[in-house]
Structures are given as C-alpha cells and as structure tokens.
Length: 130
Length: 479
Image 1 (tube, each protein chain N blue to C red):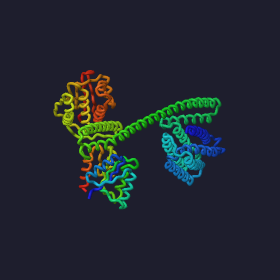
Image 2: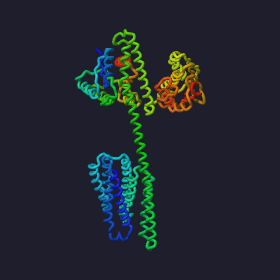
Image 3: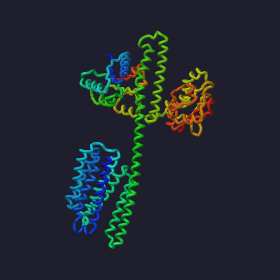
Image 4: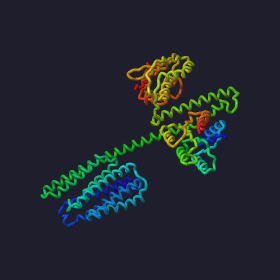
C-alpha cells in the first residue's frame, strides 16, 4: 500500500505542487491548509476516525497556529507521537531549528534547498528506516 | 497622567510638612508634655498613608501580585507589633495598612492597565523603599521591646517615615531613578530639617533670626537646585524615550523588510519548481523548440530573482544578527579553485582571461559557504565590469593574515567611490558600473563585506581611477 503523507501548508500553489509531485512519486497525500485544520485532523487521528499518516510535512510559518505548537500536539499524544514529522519551511534560523529539534522533529528541510524529486527521495529514505 | 503626577507632588509636599511637625514633636519638650504629638502623628500617618498608597496603586494592576504580597507583609508586620507592644506607632502602621488595602482596591477599579513604562521602574524602587521601611521599623520595635529606647518610642516610626518620604519623592520625581539623585534629595531634606531644628534649640533672638535666615537662604537654594535636577532628569528621560522609539522603529523596519522578502520568496518556490517540471517534460513533451527556449529564459529570470531575494535575506539576517557562522577547517585555495572553475566560462565568453596561480596556504577555520560567496562575488564583479584584459587572483600570507587579491583591468573606480563602497551599503554601485549595466543589484559586494567582517577580516580596494582597473582584496586573520 502506498505511504500516506499529511501536508500542512497554507500557501495553496505550493500545496498543489507538493501534492502533485508526491502523488506522482506514488505517495498518497492529504492536506491541511491551516494550523486549525491540522489540529482537527490530528484530533481525528487520535480518536481513530481518521487513518494515521506515515509522515507529516509541516510548514512552520502558518497564519493561525505556529507549526511548533502543532508538532507539540503530535508528540504529546500516544496515538500520534510515532508519526514522522518533517519541518518544511522557508526560514532557517538556528534558534528555530533548536526548538524544533527539542520538540522532536525528524528532519528540518528548507523549501529552497530541495526539489520535489529530492523531497520524495528523502521521505522514502526516512520511511524505509521505519 | 500629568495631572495625577502633579497631584502626587502636592500630596507629598503636604506629607512632608506633617512629617516635619511630628519630627519636632518628638524632640520639643512643649509638644512632648502636652502629648499633642499623638494627634499629629495620627494625622501625619493618614496623609503619608494616602500619598504612598496612591503611588503604589498607580501601578497596582500591572504589579498586582507584588502589591498583594506587599500588603500581606504589611499586615503581618503590624499584627506582630500589635501583640508585642501597643503604642501609637502601631496606630500609624494600622492606618497605613488599612489605607493601603483600600487604595489598592480602588486603583484596580480606576486605573486599569494603563501605565507608563517608566512608572514600572518606580514601582520596583518603591518596593525596595518599603522593604527598608519594614526593616527599620522592625529594628526599632526590637529596641523598644528590650527597653533600649523607652521614652522616644515614636522616634523609630518617624525617622523611617523620613526615609520613606525622601525615597518616595525621589522615585516619583525622577522617573529614571538614580542613586545620586536620591542621595541629593535626602541630603537636602536632612539639611533643611537640621537647620529648622537649630531654630527651635537656639535661645537668644539674634541667633534665632540668623538661623531662620540661613534656613530661608538654603530653602531658596534647594528649590533652585531641585529645579535644575528635575529638568535634567526630565530631559534625560525624554532622550531615553526618543532612543527607545527609534530602536523600535528600526526593528519594525527590519521586520517589515524580512516579511516582504518572505512574501516574495514564497511564490517563487512553486514558480521555479513548475518551470523545472515543465522543462523536464513531466506534463508532456515540449516539442516546440521556441516555447522551450523561452521557458528556459523565464526559468533563468526566476532563478535570478530568487537568488536576489536570498541575498537580501542574508544581508538582513546579518544586520539583525540572526545568522551565525558554521566554522570548519578548510583550504582556501580549494575554494578559490572551485570559484575559478565556475566563473571561467563566463570570463571566456567575454574574451577575458581569468588567472589563478594556486599556491599552498595554511588551513583556516571559516564558514566555507560564506567565504566562498564573498570570493565568488568579488571575482564575478571583476568579470562583469571588465571589457578587455582580464582578472587575476593572487594569494599570500602577510603579518599573520591571509590575503586574497582580485585585480582586474576593468572600468576602475574613483577614490571617493571606493570609500562609499567599502561601507557595505547594498544597491551601491559605481558610476561607470551603472553606465554598463543600468540599474543593477549591487549587493554582491555588500554581502562579501559582511561575510568577511563576520570572520574578523576586512575587504580593501584600490584603483588608479576610471579606466585603470580595480584591485579588491580580502584579509582574513590566521589563528
């Protein structure tokens, strides 16, 4: 079965591209376009209403809720804490990176640094380890 | 706010008068005998309490927890004194505490959260003052208990009240509380008190008049002196406020630029990626050669804009000190070699030579990516602004410094221009350079300067003038 990825991204063109690219690489995707929606989906996963994704691609700079808060929520619940989380962001700041690592992010990827093919490759590698 | 401050000033003034009266009362036989001081002490406490508590309540909302804590300390203190010894000092403490509680409650109702920034500082010092007050009173109660000072039992409370008023006034009147102002205020009040005491103690009339005159002269002096002191602190406070405002404005500007850059960069990501995928044929074959060629052009432009935004962000990060160096040991000659390899084709396209004589250099601990970018920008600029001849890179070690020299046979620069350049302002380009390339970016050098300076190095430049070529060199310290 194809691996499932939840993409949390508020920028619609970027989201469309990500979904398209990852689907072409044989991943199953679903999305959340705001922090609130992401938290709702996590809540549903917790309750067992929604299928658990293998990996969450998390944009940090969201308009409503900070990505770090979402990460905390994921790591807090026993049902979701083992989901792989990649921070996928435009900003690389040592302080932010430190905080993300503390909260248990699996990888921090700079949007500018990776092309879609590379992203798919990195995700595949990460999920293989699992 | 202004009106309230004036109100406090007047209140403190009234309290001061009452304080002076009660101060006499504990020394002067006349007052002591008829026991009038008890009444005065009570009234005094009333005013003192009112004034102090209003001042505290000024910021009761924002310092709610502190104020509550303080009032509890007060209550415990006067309860202890009640059980240990019943005196009129207890009465004054009681009044003080009750009024304190009352105004605390009142102020929460009235003032809300509006509080000037500098008032918070006042409150902090005020807490210190009250701490001293409690400590002193405690000591005097202890002395009373042990019959060390029996007759002058009110002395303790009053001498501390003196401290309290002086401190209270100085914290209120000098918003940016400083110890020298505080000491000055205490000194002035003490001298005035002593001078007026002299008046009561001297017996012959001539001496009385003389001491009164001295008192008056000193009073005038003190008034003038206070005015000067006050205006000085006031201007200092205003200055600090302006400075703070300016800092905030600057910060807001930086943040604004950062957010603009972020918004520029966000759509550029998908644009480039889509172009990439179109060109790769992900969405089908690109049979039309012209369309493909134009798309390659568009992709190139998008890449240019992207790298421009990236560079601007780098500069901004350095300005806001948000980026740090990732130091590692490496060989500079390898970095230069890779820059030369990358730029050789663009030099050759223009018919220029790009020379680099590789010599072994000591290894250095640097941020490889940033130093590479600095060297790249210097060489890239040299190629851009040279029409005939070429660019030569030489390296050497001089006075424990590593020197990387990039000299060209290009358009050259005037001395004033060089100075302007080396200040590291982005978008600054030479007069001749503007003629050649129109309005360009001109941020390459700015970045190079910032990167090199972050390593404790410096960039220098020299040129014989227009048309005579330019030499830029980087100096990096060898550790």
